[in-house]
Length: 133
Image (cartoon, rainbow, N blue to C red; front, side, top):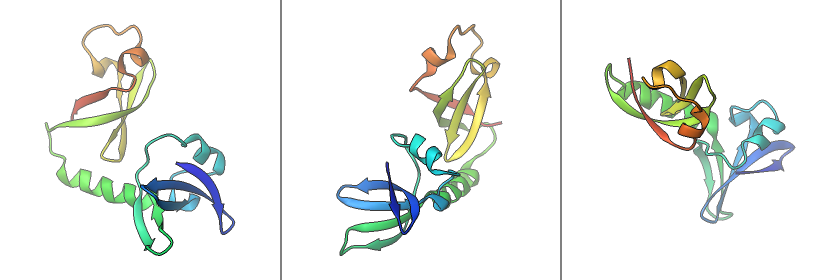
């Protein structure tokens, strides 16, 4: 993702092959351009809302994609189901997770029965299997 201004609005820019996607900041979870710039290089969800095949440009919404994915996730979750979560942030007290666009976290004492000296080192860039309760 990169940042551009379109129609006076700060927008996130994504590409699908050579097709350019424009996500206005008000269609993201970010409050300002600085937060949007901090997201450059990260994975985001987006839903295509309009497509202009002639100019190879589409308009998209991150908010609508997250709402849609969260609904699908809640529909499929069941008690005691084992699911895969993406670790989005690690600190010494918890792992922050993304489960089908639902943000959640696990406290350090729920991660392992053994002592972990450095959670960041151990879990950076890994995926964690979690149980829904």
